[in-house]
Length: 388
Image 1: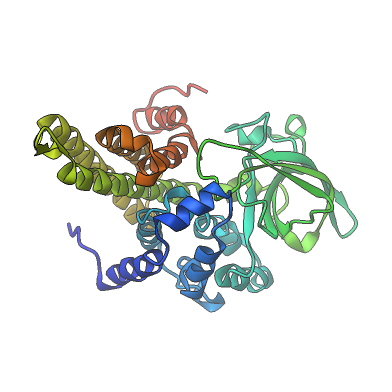
Image 2: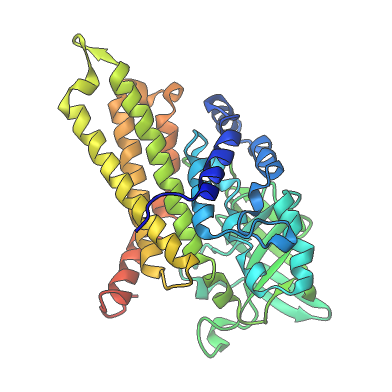
């Protein structure tokens, strides 16, 4: 077993880190305070060629694997930007995957170069208020009409819809009660976000204010047939292609935020003097920080194993889900401990750790709950009866 990075992977970490270091804590603090999308950061990453790390070389991408994407996104999230930085980019890592796998040559040529260049920004319209994680119960409906489809429905938690000009949209083309199986009759589109037919309402939320989340109301949106990805009715299977990479990337990002928080807490513990000694000299401070380190390292190993399995074309569902569970928990615990280590100053925005704690929380909730992960592992690995 080789746990080291290749020279190419080390170059990715260094190159991405060089861009990230241009955007300090003040930049991310301002983006959050103003609820402003980090356009300058997004542009810098696009100019560096990083948005296409997993995209095909023939369309301007680097053609690299999920391992390299995870290293990239870990680096992005570790330099103070947290989920604000990561969420500004990571739909480019997993969102377009159905296009790469199931799109026509014309679709790839039309869409992928613009995503790689950062000219187009996409949002992901999958989740619905009354369906949640039960994706087969979505009701947004695409009615076949001459030349395409007319779509009506609504989505929730659609990130970046305030700034996006494209939407990856999952709809039903056969109602669930009329389909042979719940997973059939679902169709995937990638199309223009026509704001004359789509209303986007921002959702105020606990953290990651720099990257918007939204309710999306779709009223008689026309989608041309050439914007349908793959076959009609098979969209559910298409989005499954991107689930494991997404879980791996979320794990990497959560671990990165935890490591950032742990670095800040360790530095504060060395410098903060109370009763004539640094607080880091006290085992009550040392031991919890050391436990956070072990948790983050363990989660990172699982994330890298899952990424390696995926890139090798081997099954990795259990490992990707476990990485997401462990990474999110380890990141959260490290951020919480960092805030407690700072004491009262941890509650102050000046020291950043309160923002890291708020931002890492989403990794425990989305894109899949911890309970669903545990149910999946119990069923698929431990051969328990299906519980849902």
